[in-house]
Each structure stands twice: as structure tokens, then as C-alpha cells.
Image (cartoon, rainbow, N blue to C red):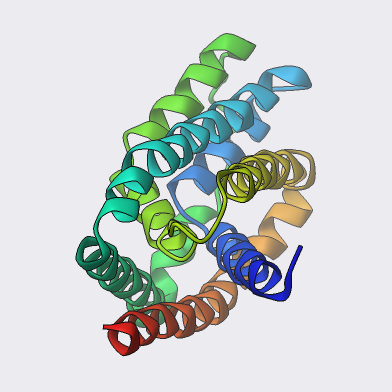
Length: 218
């Protein structure tokens, strides 16, 4: 792997990972599943979310890639849109109040008997949560604008897509095993506010860099 491809991989991988660290709807869903289910059933929601992410990654690779390869102006516009979307996510994270993170602390009621689900139901729940969230598509589109160019080979793009899909699954899987215990879940919830601020700042810097590179090339 040459230096340019390595730089692209590191940039995209870091942005993707820090985005995963930022608590969102998928995080809440995974924590709920970890509390409600035991063993492999809870893994279903993680696999479902990862599968939905894989669908959007595939769409970015196949559909958007051909458009970008055929039109430099479109590529520049999408890079600017993608960069500004990352900046938007950063602003949202930096402006969020601490009280808005209180709902992450999911408490299981002692008086409420929660019916356990099946692996398939959890998979469908996770998949639908990921596929019905348009932010996922926009986020991957903003990341892939960095690599969707004729100079970058399809094998590299595919490998990057597989890497991100696996990371999504492993991250959600780690949440299931770590946050299924009340003590660890409470500590993570308290730190979620500060984690979101740091990840928001990093995503904002990456988004600014993408917009700047697009404008300079133009």
C-alpha cells in the first residue's frame, strides 16, 4: 500500500471509528438488547445494524462511485456536501446539552417483566434501525467522497467497506458484552457527554479538511 492510500485509509478509519464512539440511536438499541436478552440473541441486533451499514456502504461503492468517476464537478459538489455534513454532526455534538444524554442511562424496571426476543427478531430490529436512518447513508457518502475517485482502485474501496462493516459489528458486539452490566453502563453514560464533544471536534476538523481539499482542487 503506497503512502497516499495509507493516508486515505487512516483518515477514513479514524473518522469512522470516532463516529461510532458518539452515542446515538443504534447505541441505545444495542444497550436495550443487551439488557433484555442473554447470549446470542443480543448479538442479532449488532449483526442487523452491521448489515444495514453494509448495504449503505455497498450503495456508495456501486452507485455513487460510477457517478463520481464520470463527473469531476459532481465529485467536488458531493465532497463539499459530505464535508459540511460532518461539520454539521460536529456542531450538533458540540452544542448538545448535558441533560440530553440522560436518556442513555436505561434502567430496567424491577416491576416490569421484559419478554426476551429471538435472534431473528433482534436482527430485524437492528437492520431496520440502521436502514431507516438516512444519516447513515449521508455519513458513509461523506466518508467515501475521499476515496471515490478514478485513481483509487475498486479493491481498495471494497476492502475499506469490509473493514468498516466489521468494525461496526465488533463495536456493537463489545457494547453488548460490556454494557450489559449495570456498573459499566452507568460509568459509560456519565462519560458519553464528554466523548461526544471530543468526537464532534475531530469530525468537524475532518469535515473542514474535506471541504478545503475540494475547494482547492476546484
